Length: 107
Image 1 (cartoon, rainbow, N blue to C red):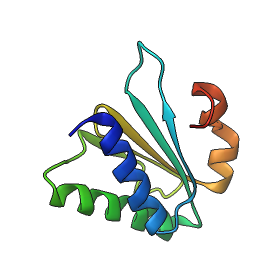
Image 2: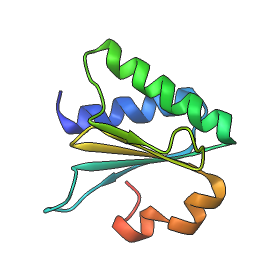
Image 3: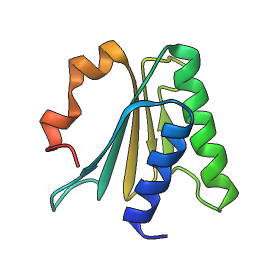
């Protein structure tokens, strides 16, 4: 699957599960990935549900993350799909790290 298509599917899955302000950031080259997806969860349980839903939906089409971190802590989860890295934040964490400003304009 092409990175752009994977990013769009991930965004759709997160939005359908009520991830807030879900954004695709196209990374400039060279970068660690082609795209970052950033979304905000309402609370710890919602963050875990978003991560699990995304993993389940992508696993169903044969795609698994290379790594995932932070899901159990419930503040900032990262799911690494190599060309697409998904960041699921609590509201406070997203405001603090502000990846959109660090890595580029919202796309």
